[in-house]
Image (tube, rainbow, N blue to C red; front, side, top):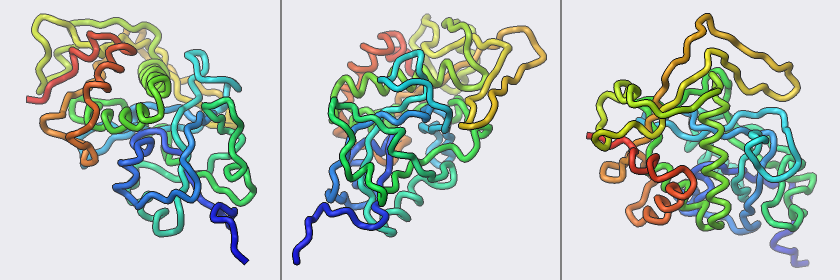
Length: 298
C-alpha cells in the first residue's frame, strides 16, 4: 500500500535557524535540501539572539542565541527581547545531523526547542508536522552564557556574514528582514553583559579601533557608553542574578563592524549576494551613519 510522502515518521528532526541558516543557499552548502516538509518562517520565544559567538577561524563574531525565560505571547517588540525570528527546516537523517553539527562546531550546543515556543509569522497556526509527538526541533545555542563575547577589532561583525543572513531574510520578506535587524542590534547593544543604559556616539572611541580606517572627521557609528551595572540573561527556571562592578564610571566600548566584501571573511558569502538591497535595508533600519561608518580593513 502506498504511503503519503509527507507521512510522519518516528523522530522527524527539524532545525530552527536564526542566522546564516535562514538562507536556503547557505544551508544547501552544508547538506542537500530535503523538501519532504517545507521550511517555515517562525518566531521562537525564550531565545535571545546576539552578536556573541567568536569564530577564530574566520576572524569575526557570529550570531548566537541564549535560552531565557519568555516574556510575551505576541510579536517581537523592544519590550520583549526574548524572541528571535528565523526558519524551521527539515533536517533529514543522521548524515545531515552530523553535517550541521560539524558546521556549527564547538562554539554551539544543540538542544531541543519545544513546539509550544514557536509562533508562525503568518496568521495561520503551526502545521501539524511540527506539533506532532514524533517531531524533534533542534536549535544551536550558547553552551554557556558566560562565554558570550561581543565583537572586537580582531573579531568584528563581518558584512559578508551579514549579507548571507539578510539575503535569506529578504527571500522571506522585507518585514521579516527588518525584524531581524531591529531585534539583533537591540539585543547586542542593550542586553549583553554589561547592559547598556545610555548610548551615545563618541569620537574618542576611534582610538579603540586600531588597524582600521573610518570616514575622515566623523565619529564611529557603533560606540556606546556602558553603565557600571552589568547583568546577564537569566536561563529558564533560575533566579534572576545581577552582577555589579566596583567602579561608578562609565566605559566606552566600540562594537566593530567591518565591510569585508573586497576580502571576504565568511566562506559561504557569494559575490552575487544582493548587497544593494542589504545596504538599503540597513540604512532604513539603523541609519545612514551606521552604514557609512562601517570599518574598512586596510
